[in-house]
Length: 67
Image: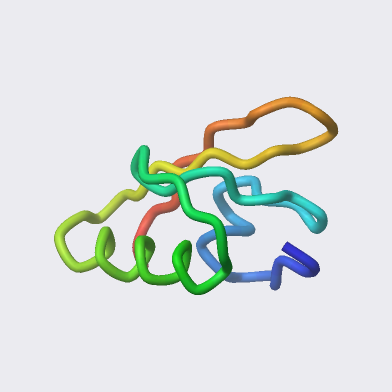
């Protein structure tokens, strides 16, 4: 992510500027569009979405809660 906006669920879940999304609900993607699609699909049926980001060479699991 180039920039995580204040007040958005991703920011509240702990996502930081520069994080690289690795997977959404265990589903890996290769492009921004694939991740956006996976996130949209997951939020249709869930109130919380589990994502994994790469940060400084480590993988960090975050839980994004739908508002």
